[in-house]
Length: 148
Image 1 (tube, helix red, strand yellow):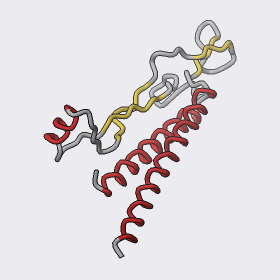
Image 2 (cartoon, rainbow, N blue to C red):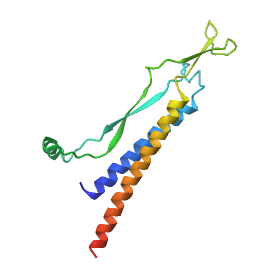
Image 3 (spheres, one colour):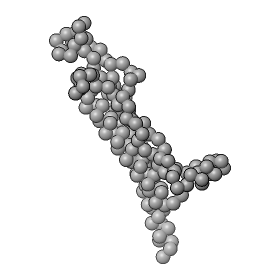
Protein backbone atom coordinates (compact mmCIF):
# COMPACT_ATOMS: atom_id res chain seq x y z
CA UNK A 1 0.00 0.00 0.00
CA UNK A 2 1.38 3.37 -0.94
CA UNK A 3 1.97 5.89 1.80
CA UNK A 4 -0.37 8.47 0.32
CA UNK A 5 -3.07 5.84 -0.13
CA UNK A 6 -3.09 5.27 3.65
CA UNK A 7 -3.54 9.03 4.14
CA UNK A 8 -6.46 8.95 1.71
CA UNK A 9 -8.10 6.00 3.46
CA UNK A 10 -7.92 7.74 6.83
CA UNK A 11 -9.14 11.03 5.35
CA UNK A 12 -12.11 9.35 3.68
CA UNK A 13 -13.03 7.74 7.00
CA UNK A 14 -12.86 11.09 8.78
CA UNK A 15 -14.99 12.73 6.09
CA UNK A 16 -17.60 9.96 6.22
CA UNK A 17 -17.83 10.05 10.02
CA UNK A 18 -18.10 13.85 10.02
CA UNK A 19 -21.00 13.58 7.56
CA UNK A 20 -22.60 10.91 9.76
CA UNK A 21 -22.27 13.20 12.80
CA UNK A 22 -23.93 16.02 10.82
CA UNK A 23 -26.91 13.77 9.99
CA UNK A 24 -27.17 12.70 13.64
CA UNK A 25 -27.15 16.37 14.65
CA UNK A 26 -29.97 16.99 12.16
CA UNK A 27 -31.95 14.15 13.73
CA UNK A 28 -31.42 15.60 17.21
CA UNK A 29 -32.38 19.09 16.05
CA UNK A 30 -35.66 17.76 14.65
CA UNK A 31 -36.66 15.58 17.61
CA UNK A 32 -39.86 17.65 18.09
CA UNK A 33 -40.59 18.55 14.45
CA UNK A 34 -44.15 17.48 13.78
CA UNK A 35 -44.46 19.24 10.43
CA UNK A 36 -41.77 19.62 7.77
CA UNK A 37 -41.91 21.79 4.65
CA UNK A 38 -43.87 19.09 2.81
CA UNK A 39 -46.40 18.83 5.67
CA UNK A 40 -45.34 15.48 7.12
CA UNK A 41 -43.70 14.50 10.37
CA UNK A 42 -39.89 14.46 10.31
CA UNK A 43 -38.40 10.98 9.84
CA UNK A 44 -35.06 9.97 11.29
CA UNK A 45 -32.26 9.78 8.71
CA UNK A 46 -29.63 7.03 8.53
CA UNK A 47 -26.30 7.12 6.65
CA UNK A 48 -25.01 4.14 4.66
CA UNK A 49 -21.33 3.66 3.81
CA UNK A 50 -19.61 1.59 1.15
CA UNK A 51 -16.02 0.79 0.28
CA UNK A 52 -14.63 3.08 -2.41
CA UNK A 53 -14.07 1.32 -5.67
CA UNK A 54 -10.56 0.41 -6.71
CA UNK A 55 -10.20 1.79 -10.21
CA UNK A 56 -6.57 1.52 -11.26
CA UNK A 57 -5.93 -1.77 -9.52
CA UNK A 58 -8.97 -3.83 -10.53
CA UNK A 59 -6.79 -6.61 -11.89
CA UNK A 60 -4.51 -6.51 -8.85
CA UNK A 61 -7.53 -6.45 -6.54
CA UNK A 62 -9.01 -9.54 -8.15
CA UNK A 63 -5.69 -11.38 -7.93
CA UNK A 64 -5.01 -10.30 -4.34
CA UNK A 65 -8.46 -11.33 -3.15
CA UNK A 66 -7.88 -14.77 -4.64
CA UNK A 67 -4.76 -15.00 -2.46
CA UNK A 68 -6.71 -13.82 0.59
CA UNK A 69 -5.16 -10.37 0.91
CA UNK A 70 -7.12 -7.13 0.68
CA UNK A 71 -6.60 -3.68 -0.73
CA UNK A 72 -8.93 -0.71 -0.49
CA UNK A 73 -9.25 2.98 -1.08
CA UNK A 74 -11.36 4.01 1.88
CA UNK A 75 -15.03 4.58 2.41
CA UNK A 76 -17.74 6.74 0.88
CA UNK A 77 -21.28 7.73 1.76
CA UNK A 78 -23.68 6.07 -0.64
CA UNK A 79 -27.06 6.93 0.82
CA UNK A 80 -28.91 8.99 3.37
CA UNK A 81 -32.19 7.17 3.85
CA UNK A 82 -35.20 7.80 6.02
CA UNK A 83 -35.79 5.25 8.77
CA UNK A 84 -39.10 3.67 7.84
CA UNK A 85 -38.70 0.62 10.10
CA UNK A 86 -39.50 2.39 13.37
CA UNK A 87 -42.85 4.03 14.08
CA UNK A 88 -43.59 7.61 14.96
CA UNK A 89 -44.04 8.38 18.64
CA UNK A 90 -47.73 9.01 19.28
CA UNK A 91 -48.61 11.41 22.10
CA UNK A 92 -52.04 12.53 23.22
CA UNK A 93 -52.32 16.32 22.97
CA UNK A 94 -55.64 17.46 21.46
CA UNK A 95 -54.62 21.15 21.74
CA UNK A 96 -51.60 20.70 19.44
CA UNK A 97 -52.15 22.13 15.93
CA UNK A 98 -50.88 18.89 14.33
CA UNK A 99 -53.13 16.58 16.36
CA UNK A 100 -55.21 14.08 14.39
CA UNK A 101 -58.97 13.62 14.77
CA UNK A 102 -58.39 11.47 17.90
CA UNK A 103 -56.15 14.09 19.55
CA UNK A 104 -52.85 12.28 18.97
CA UNK A 105 -49.72 13.99 17.65
CA UNK A 106 -47.12 12.08 15.62
CA UNK A 107 -43.63 12.96 16.84
CA UNK A 108 -40.52 11.92 14.89
CA UNK A 109 -39.10 8.42 15.30
CA UNK A 110 -35.93 9.92 16.81
CA UNK A 111 -34.75 8.28 20.04
CA UNK A 112 -32.36 10.54 21.95
CA UNK A 113 -30.47 7.62 23.52
CA UNK A 114 -29.95 5.94 20.13
CA UNK A 115 -28.82 9.16 18.50
CA UNK A 116 -26.39 10.02 21.29
CA UNK A 117 -24.97 6.48 21.16
CA UNK A 118 -24.54 6.80 17.40
CA UNK A 119 -22.90 10.20 17.86
CA UNK A 120 -20.39 8.73 20.32
CA UNK A 121 -19.74 5.89 17.85
CA UNK A 122 -19.13 8.36 15.00
CA UNK A 123 -16.85 10.41 17.23
CA UNK A 124 -14.79 7.36 18.22
CA UNK A 125 -14.54 6.20 14.61
CA UNK A 126 -13.36 9.70 13.64
CA UNK A 127 -10.73 9.55 16.40
CA UNK A 128 -9.61 6.10 15.22
CA UNK A 129 -9.06 7.50 11.73
CA UNK A 130 -7.05 10.38 13.20
CA UNK A 131 -4.90 7.86 15.06
CA UNK A 132 -4.32 5.84 11.87
CA UNK A 133 -3.46 9.04 9.98
CA UNK A 134 -0.99 10.08 12.69
CA UNK A 135 0.60 6.60 12.66
CA UNK A 136 1.06 6.78 8.88
CA UNK A 137 2.56 10.25 9.22
CA UNK A 138 4.92 9.05 11.96
CA UNK A 139 6.07 6.11 9.79
CA UNK A 140 6.72 8.47 6.89
CA UNK A 141 8.73 10.82 9.10
CA UNK A 142 10.75 7.92 10.52
CA UNK A 143 11.43 6.68 7.01
CA UNK A 144 12.68 10.09 6.00
CA UNK A 145 14.93 10.22 9.07
CA UNK A 146 16.45 6.84 8.18
CA UNK A 147 17.29 8.15 4.73
CA UNK A 148 19.48 10.97 6.10
